[in-house]
Length: 489
Image (cartoon, rainbow, N blue to C red; front, side, top):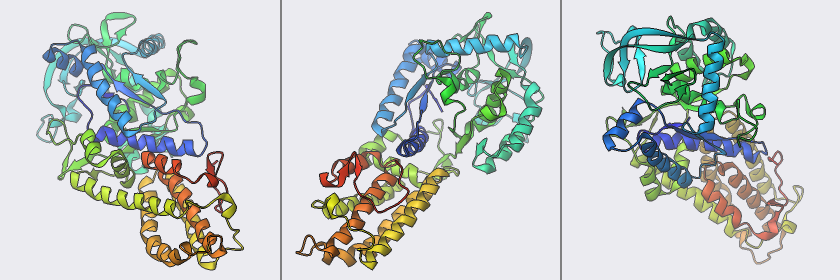
């Protein structure tokens, strides 16, 4: 998702971007073409109000915050291919074309409305948002009563289609248990207000056919997924070929923006634009982050600064934490957890060092065939092969935490079961003995397997290890002769 530039990044922003980065790097490693898009959501009432308090323009404010996000992504090695900034003129042109098209189709209309408005969430509220006592909960922040004229999107026209589409789809929402949340949210009896009068909000994309209004920030922001993928772009825009990228294989978002924004508004908008069922994206929805049992929140003040985590533990420790937790569930985060993750990271790194130290004189010519291998080495290689197959499937299923746990358990067990057992052979005087080369052939396979399976997560560490491979083991950027089958190209 694109991040709202009303405040600096916190650990939740870092978690989501690393999660998406792990996914992108895994598919690139398989030889697949990947386009990884993220960016910043820069419009809206909160941005305008904060800029006014600071005595600067909204553009100056969002530029300052955007620079903080970009610096963090560089520090974390985020490998995005595209950058979405909603103040970009190309995005503005796309949004205005869509608004004009929807108006021509009869999907937009103007009316006056009186109701309660959440300043924090920048939306009108209904009685459904009230609690049992009839009050609007703290999640809505300041709530004021407003009466004003606005433009509306005919959301109710798409309710029945959305119900049928979500019910029959097997992968619109992942994990599957969140499908029920979307179905429960598709119960609209009112349309969606998609404008704000310039009289109270000037910081937004102007309606092309009614310049006294700007576009509601959510309607504007959701369009980033297609505008920066080249939808309705001019030939010389510098944007990608939309036909090659859409539908998105995966939109990585948090559960707090699943409903109604991504699970209801977004498919309805796409449907109104003319996108088919087959052109709907898959939503990969991650959980929240809890600190001392409380949901992390800027308003509470219990946020963790990811740059401080990187300074104290290193970027790869933060990345390893992301890869070690189940994305589908809420997760605990604290400096104590990062300390434990750092201990695990050191063990992984030490295993890399051990493998490299025992292969510094090993070349492609030293590999032995499976037939020549000692039985104990065949056993270790078979375990490695099974692990690669298991964790490859885990990556494919977005179960990065399962892949990490399986590899970490393997490292712990193989250190005692295999490394200790073969150390005498590795240190034997006869450097060219079959016994020594048999063990080294296994270690060479282990090293490449670890680098390839950990590289999407421990990107900095694995780059360092890859650079230290003995030259004689390498051909065209990979280990020259590997016993394992089924490696990505």
